[in-house]
Length: 296
Image (cartoon, rainbow, N blue to C red; front, top):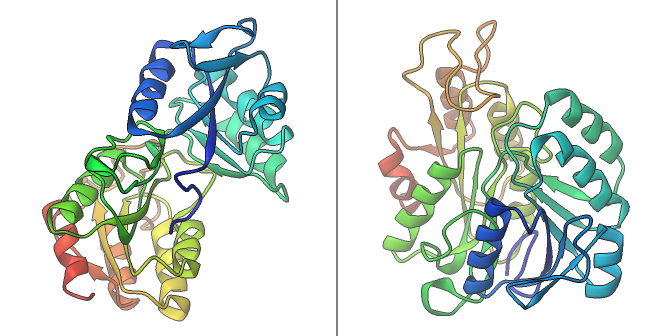
């Protein structure tokens, strides 16, 4: 089983005719994902790679294709509107891959989506993969930019701000014979659509997720909030890692959201909160799978 997406999830791609969106749409098709429509205003009637119909609007694409999730590869100045258009069309899930969306735009999006039935993951994220059962996990649902072949169908949930660390954790699990239920990259921007805690709750409720790897980084308090909830509520073993332990105080490192202020958001504070919650914390990125295996 899985969270958020399953192999039969029908995906539309906003920005499908751009070079970046087009390249990753092609990779998702090759992975066996159900890419049922694309949206680029002014290009209705065309087909992507002679197989995916393109529409002028998300509403029209949803009506014609039955899509229930969207991947957004729209350039930053227009991405916030693209997210809201997808929500207005009633999509259950919107995954914003776009990097560089203005913070002010995302604050407005977050406010607009409050109380909405649409779940946003991202922006500035690698996306979501629920692995398939074919060779190199073919036949799964890949929304975004994560390499599909590193995955393996199984029962470990992975959540991370960072794309690269997501891939590292997934590959370690796969090499140790542990498959993944779903892997979620939530992105590193200051105003994320979904937080660590949002996704942890989904994994906790998923009957087919046996264990969880939660990867965080310096800045903000999302990891501490997730750890506090895990301590009181999580029924499953959780391993973790915090990136940025070597960052100088006050230095902006990595993602836009990764800045330490007023003594909060330090690696030390996050690791302490996670260990207090009973999370098995890896000291280095190379030990993420090992940290989970110890407590399974």
